[in-house]
Length: 182
Image 1: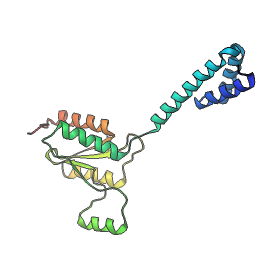
Image 2: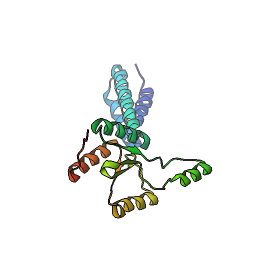
Image 3: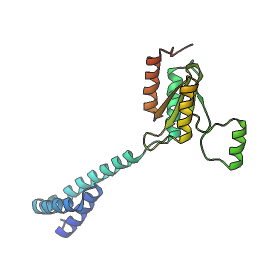
Image 4: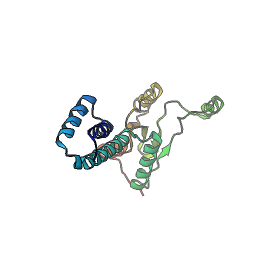
């Protein structure tokens, strides 16, 4: 049997891990102490511990946002399986480098703001961002306007793999591009 003091403490702790605020927890604890017989308290605590565990697991999952790299890799894998005859290429433009490496790449033709992926056959540039938190830089915005307005190319912003897939499918439908050549 669990005493009132221990029951209150353990129940409050489990409810707190479920994200329940103090005022509401106090009310729920008082209610449970009043209505739960001593011999049922173990079961009540077990149930609340399970709820706390599930809540924390869901909370961790919700916080996890895949990296831009992961989203882009998943997209490229999907694209290659869906459109095997169409070339998609990565433009290695971002990332942190030593100043000397950056300078060498600028001399080789690195262009700040260039999109992450290019599909030459469709004249389509794809800039990838994470599902949440990704922001276009000034250079990326300038590049997007340049390729669309000066070059007549297409440019899309993909916020994650699924969004990228949807936009490519919409692009194909809207532009009547032949999706598979070979």
